[in-house]
Length: 183
Image (tube, rainbow, N blue to C red):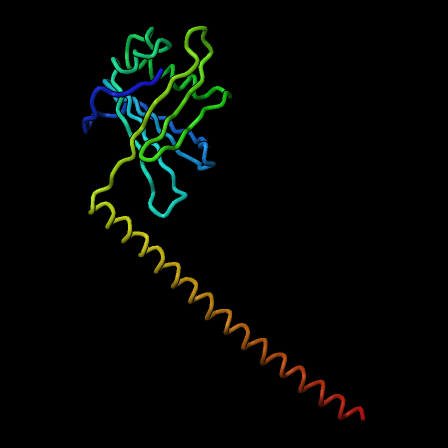
């Protein structure tokens, strides 16, 4: 059964517990999935860092939304739902992430006669211009630092090559002198 949140609010409720998992998608991308227990809701984050722009997906699920899944309907609180989800996620069964245009589906298989899975749909978080600018700025800063390190390594290698050339030249000169002396 698909779960969809009644509303997505930017609540700043304290995080009671948090657990992170890594799963591979249908497109062979690795996702880091974070489940947060925030007392009155469960917040899910997912991110993929394969691409140049780090895609982030997120969604808030309230107890009423979570109980729409018959498997989770027996839970009386967000804490119980969170514990059950973490229990299911830690099992060795195959979790599935399906990538779509602007969302991902996280499918958690469960062993139950009437319910076969729990499905979460997370929407891609649209970054503000300021977030994009900050991301690009950080990437440029990292690239500049990497370039400076490579320049320094290059200069060190050039110096070592010059030292080796001089040593090689000296060895050749010594060999030539010894050959002349022995003749």
